[in-house]
Length: 459
Image (cartoon, rainbow, N blue to C red; front, side):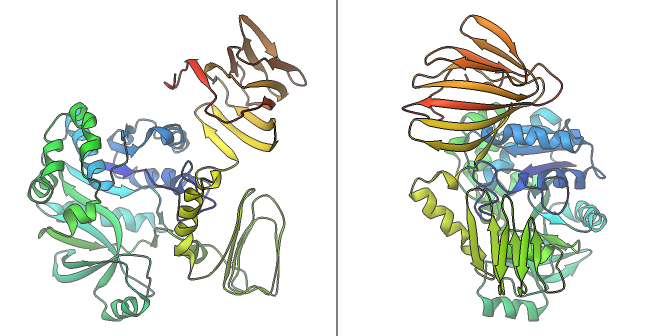
């Protein structure tokens, strides 16, 4: 068995906590580890880390590596999509990788899963996967979650006759309105579509040949050749490409306390509540509030008389919504993108392969940042045409290259980088390097970087 974890994502549904540059799978929800790390850990009772393949993109590579380290699964494989092409091409790329690099044949079982779901009962989850491995054979297995409420945010699977541990899938249903969702709940044979699939390499190839010949033609090539033509593949989900067209689909009930936590309403549902039904996190002071979600991050949130309200605060955005309306958050993100707002893509803290930086303040001609460089890491050798930089070390030790000179800069010491001067910053120590950077100039955006050498391949 090979596990294919899809770790792309646009960071829209849990805005402002998730952003395009830091989507949901990297958030720590429901535990001390990220959703991606939790996903990987769920499969380690079934397979070794070397049998896990994670599909992501270049922008998220360093995040994925960090999360694999956090869950002791650094032997897992990471493949990078050249461009985003939805889940069907992504799975084809991963399947070809399994064939060429991991020795998979037509009988190898592939388990395809999102990277950003919560599972409250891992033992039941593992049992469902084992049932699917038996049921797969020449069929495509989906995993259906029995609904406990008339949810309008999920697609549905209509189950038919039973076959062993599985049910024949009669049809797939799009996200319903409230009245239709209520009817599905009462019928008893409708399941939420979890987005998990299990099938053999051979079955996947056969169904692509029947329903998606362009993707099948790519699968028939080598992994390297498929990478080169990946941008030419159709932009289509696995559901639309195969599942809704195939006559070989069955579903396995997944009774594992599952949630895709795809909205703030779903987050409210899974978080612990106080006696008044409030889910509270952070520095919050609710007075006469009921059945509300209040998530604080960087400041005190005081609420009075709130009922069925969602409040989510980060250091640059405050979201306020009525419960039941949080699916519309993606409309907010779309409008922010249309206006060219930074908030749609990134937080004030931005993660890089070497560490992170936070914008503390900015105005005409200046920008103030806090920079953290992880032990043993170094930034690229670079210069800026439009700004100078003044570095003040507040923790750890910096190795600084400015022009032809190298120097060590310790706590409470500083260094100055003139405009158009090659420079590099490194952390040679065993603890994080923390420093304040003051930028001065008429243009202070991140694209004013000319890289000459970079250990992360960005030069």
